[in-house]
Length: 485
Image (cartoon, rainbow, N blue to C red; front, side, top):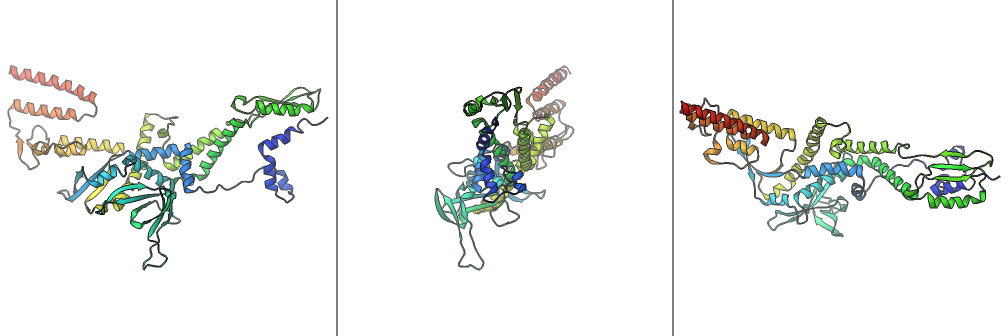
């Protein structure tokens, strides 16, 4: 009797391409003993590095890369920026700072070009830096030499870097060669900002991105996804092989056709396949070939690859939706770590680069672009510090309001200093606003005003309302007692 797997095994080998792999491994030479033992198994291959364009495409297609990287880029891009004018040192030795609300540089930073807002521009800058280590930005100028617009250039569109020697040489290239609007274009050196994260192997070259070390992990993840796609599309997996005694060998082709009709596609995954047995008198045999994702450790493998990507980018799991074994304390700690070690670093990098390359173009050396404080704990500490300063009489009303980003009151009101009730209130120039020897009723009114100020400093509206009710009770009781007296 013919063997039952005589036709089935070659079909399986052809189905999975094992014969082609065997021929590729063997070549034209006769395989030796070691090669015979591994016939049909592909040899390990090195994962080739990705090109710049492939990294940008991978960002769009790979979830393990896009989710954490997008978290860093979006959070860094949404921080508010301010333009400051740095003046002479004040009495405390620190330079006086004045916020500039209207200036061409601020308008450019908020709207770099007609197609992008400032948030979109900064997000793209962070993405290019993290992916490829460089942020090319083309600059168009006004007639007076100030920047008119900023246009991010995809890093793979920079085809050739300038070459400038000192003294000049005939081979010098004082221009950039870039792909602009689909054409190979030469632009002067000063028309492109080259913001780069230096590559230790080539500090003056093209730069190095943070995610380049994830090339192998991203490739493995993509291959797993492709395998799963083929698995469900072609049904390249048989859950069981059923050997039926007495099945005629000539019917194997018919059953093979049935297999192709009944085991291809997601609707047929897990169906058993029947083949002829060797012995017609033997019992029915059921051979389990179950190799699901879990049994192949692919679920754990993909989790490991995702964790590796997050570790490289420094993104805590809570910020990408993984709340396993998480609570309020760990979530707040994750937000603090992300703000301090991811967002702030990206903001400081952008501030340093653009203040060195763009701000000087306006000819005003006292201008500086700065982002707002993004670390939540630092903002809360600043709030406590300002409140303590106001209560203790060490800062004025306007200083308190300026620290919270509020509009200044100006005049004598803005220069007032709050001091304890048994002392006189003084303005910034040292003049007395109200003396401690005032009439008791007047002192009571002053204390009520201070109580109201304290209520306004409370962090939540609910706490303010509760404190206000207590204030009204004390005020009404004091007023009645004073009238009785």
